[in-house]
Structure formats: C-alpha cells, structure tokens
Length: 477
Image 1: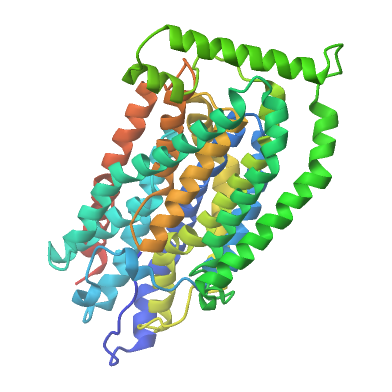
Image 2: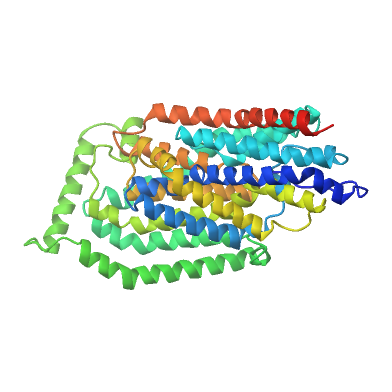
C-alpha cells in the first residue's frame, strides 16, 4: 500500500539482504494469501449478480472473472506506480529505518490477508483497499504512534462507507426505473425491448469506453488522448455496436423470442392497447387529485408484477458485458495496489529504495495467480451472498446494478475519491432490490455486511499492529 522513499545510501546491501531474506520469503507467502483472499472476496463481487440472475453458471463466472481480471491487471494495471495516492501515512518518517519499513510491509500483508480470509469464511463482502489502509495504519501506529498519520484520508474513507452505496444505489435505481418505464411495464414489453435494444447497447458501450479511454492507462497511451478524441472514439464504438445489434442480433432474437402469430391483427392489437391506456387514464381522472403517494406509485415499479422471462433474456448479454467490464476495471485499478506491499518488499530487498519503476510483471502475475486460485476455491461464498441471499436479481436488474456500481467506482477513481467497488455493488443491490419486488432485501444479511464494512479498517489494523509488535520484538533491535 505504501510507496518507497529514498533511504540512506550508506547501507551495506549484502548485509541488509542477508538480514531480511526471511522477511521477503514470508512476505511472498502472505502476499499469496492476500491475493487468495482478494480473489475469494473482492473479485467475486463483480459476477455475483450475474450468477444470481442465472445469466451464467458459477463455473462460467469463474472463467470470465479470471480472464478479465488478468487482462485488466496486465494491460492497464502494469503501469500503476503511484501507490502513495491511497496511503494514510507520511512515510518520510521511515527515511532512516529501511528495515522497519520492510517489516511493516510484512505486517501489512499479514493483517490484510487475515482479515480477507476471515470475512470470506463468513461470506461477507469487504473492501480490500480499506483493509490495506487499516493494515498500513496498524503497523505505523506501533512504530511511530500517530506521527505521520494523514487524518484527512481516514475521514475520506469513513465518508465513503456512506457515499459509495448511496451514489451507486442512486445510479442503479434511476437506470432501473428508466428501464421499467421504457420496457418492463409496457403492454408489449418484448417488442419495446427489441426496439430499444440497440439504444441500450450504444449508451452502455459508449459510456464504458469513454471511462476507459479518458485519462486512462499510460501503458496504452490513453492518457495522451484529449477529451474530444475520447468522445469521438466512444461514440463510434457505440454506433458500431448498435448497428451490429440492429441488423445482425435483433432479427435472430426476434425470431427466437417473439410469440407465434395470433388471429389478432396488428391494428386490432394497437386499438386494444389504446383502449386499455385510455381506460387507465379515465380511471386516474375519476379518482383523486394527485398526491405525493400516487406520484411515487406511478414512478416506481409495480412490485407485484411478474416480469416476462423472454423480455429478461434481452438483458443477459448486456449484464455479462457490464460484469466483464467491471472485472477488467477491478483488475486494472485494484490489483497493483493490493500487491504493492510485496512490490515494496522486492524493491527494498534489491536496494531500489526510491522505486521509480512500476510494478514488476512477475510480481503482478504472481498476484493474479493467487487471485484466480482464491476465486476458484472460495469465490462461491461471497457470490451467493451478493447474488442470491441479499436480494433476488434478474438480468434486467442485474444489468442496472452492475452498471451503476461500475460507473460509481470509475467516476470516483477519476476524481480521486477512495470509494470501494464492494460497497458500490452492495449498495446498488440493496437499492434496486428495495424498489423492484415484494421480496425486497434480506435486511439481516445487509446488516451483517454493513457491520463488516465498519470493522474492516480497525480489524485489519489490529491484526497488522499485533504482527508488527511481534516482528519488532523478534527481529528489530
């Protein structure tokens, strides 16, 4: 989690390496455990709703998550060097004590890894980033007390506990309400869904592409593109996708999903629809002066409605695309930060005390391997909590949930807010679940999840502090 600063040039590197080799080995083992826990917990969130909506099986989710997390980490995350941006400690206080800083990375890895494994065992989705922050804070409190603690960052993280789910829940709810008004509540939702499908793909791909391109990866030179070039490229990609959907995909979907023709002609069908709409309007006029409750009832989805399975199938591909995009973004933004303590250990051991280079590719691949192993071994626990146990999810609501969470996380990262992708996804699940169906949300599970968020930072911090105290007693003079 911490960047490495310039240390004393008078250190005997050979002697330093002989004294700290054991710490490097232990740190590598703990880094694998941390990656394992991250794969089992954090990475599982991206595809939890896709599994819950039955858009994919859990094995298919494992495969897609492994592919897109790896691509995001290798193609974009490789160039991540500014790990200091999420630090909570002014590490200049370690200028003259490189060994203490190195052991601090071991404590950070141990504290964060332990907390992720504990949370995963209890099927609780927690933030790896916040666990790393807590672990970093824990070891430095043992070494230097409150000296160097950046309290403004701590306050930002506490605010993000509330801001993350509120923002993502708002975006996901607005998108679901729009989807409901445009498609789901219509008398002919399948026809309306087929009509608007290219529009949904255009906006989904265009917005996602812009978020990737604008101020994007230096490795791929996306950061050199001006905003208007990013807009043009994104619009072009969105238009191409919409045209493909309109002329290649939609005819096949229409033939497969549309009901068999009836004796009812199209003009008669339209007339019946007009009659029904007119009757509904007359009934509304007959009742009541408009009230706030009536207005809300008209805006919000009908929670007793059973949605058409054929209509929901239109959203399966959209939901999968958004989930893959979320996995790619998570791999790009979070993986390098999660293995940063190991990167710091390697740099210190090699004598690279200022660490001007990015994350070594072998360290990155080591972290990705650990993440994939954790995902395949224990990912089902958190996937079921997010995708099925907390609230029922359909492909339509799942698309809105994942889109809202991904957008919130990316917007926050662009403006520098320490928002957790885990909190974003859970907030979106709860918000959409509350307005979508009578089953709503399992509030007891959400209560447990929310409590785990609050105790993540201090929990990881306490474990890290205990490990650092032990390391100081055993290895430091």
